[in-house]
Amino acid sequence: MSRFFDLVSTSARNMGSVGASNPTPAALESRSQLIKLDSNESPFGPSARVVDAMRRALSGANSYPDDDCGELRRKLATHHKLPPEQVLVTAGSTAMLSLLCQTLLAPGLNAVTSERSFIVYSLAVQAAGAHLVEAPMRSGEDSFDLEAILAAIDADTRIVFLANPNNPTGTMLEATVVERFLTKVPGHVVVVLDEAYYEFALHFAALRKIEYSSSLEYVRQGSSVAVLRTFSKAHGLAGLRVGYGLGPAELLGYCARMRNTFSVSSVAQAAALAALDDHQHVQLVVENNAVQSRVLTQGLSAMGRRVVPTSANFLFCDLGEDAASFATRLLEQGVAVRPLGPWGAPNCIRVTIGTAEQNQAFLEAAGRAVARGPAGHRASSLARGT
Image 1: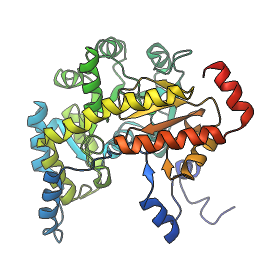
Image 2 (image 1 turned 90 degrees about the vertical axis):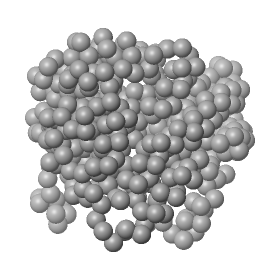
Image 3 (image 1 turned 120 degrees about the vertical axis):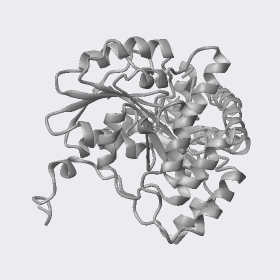
Image 4 (image 1 turned 135 degrees about the vertical axis):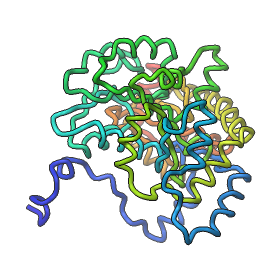
């Protein structure tokens, strides 16, 4: 029994550790040369306009930031055609997730989502002392079973999380499907539409001639819906931690009471303000993503691996072998991907779509990793065409 076991909360005892060890100098040197395709970060980073805005903001680093993120909040409200009280800026969309859980959940209550979805949902729900119910995915597919999610809702449910597109599968729910789902959700439940990959999904939907999202219409209609967006992905600001929620003014007001003071830095606010106007940079990012998704899909498929069509900036790939071992062989070659054992998919990896050069390096490393794999597995998997 440890010294603090009886002192900490039940939630803290039951949660798994997510901390990282302190890296050695050798590890830091290796990391600087690593091709990181494991965290869905933008390979292009912030635009020059955004970097200039950050530099200008640094001169005021001796002052606390605007706690309300007023200028950014108003600009987002104008951008989305919503009143400012329906916008809440947070330190990344994961912070908004935590605020929603702290505000709506408590011991004895639950939230519902699909299995094999964003892993932070479980952490945020547990931290609030509540329980996360994971409905099964559609049998034989890698997409949500919305009827199963509806069936999992009970009198103690307060939140349903729908990641759209889903992380880690990259699959998307069309607007009409979400609309039908919302009409069946009981009134005591808030549906959180997590649209962290919104810009990528919107671009893919246009190419495929389908409608991606009507989420803001639900917000304007006063539905019990909270929409999450972030500057971490298409805008390339993952290291600054700035995202936001859009939803009912009353709900966001309660969430704001739970927010840490000065949680979004002045540099992050300045960067987000500049990024919101830089449409050309976002267009470059999403167009590269669409082209390179095809390159990676074709390359992995040629190796006999199954790739799920994506609507995000990453691919979900079924290797047909132990993903952790495969990822280790890649890491030895200087390429990082995400093995999905913790998501209940031990034979699958998630690969961020990088630049043309990064993707080529990954495919070459993956080819060598396949060749170095167990000979028996390689022969059988190629024979199966998996």
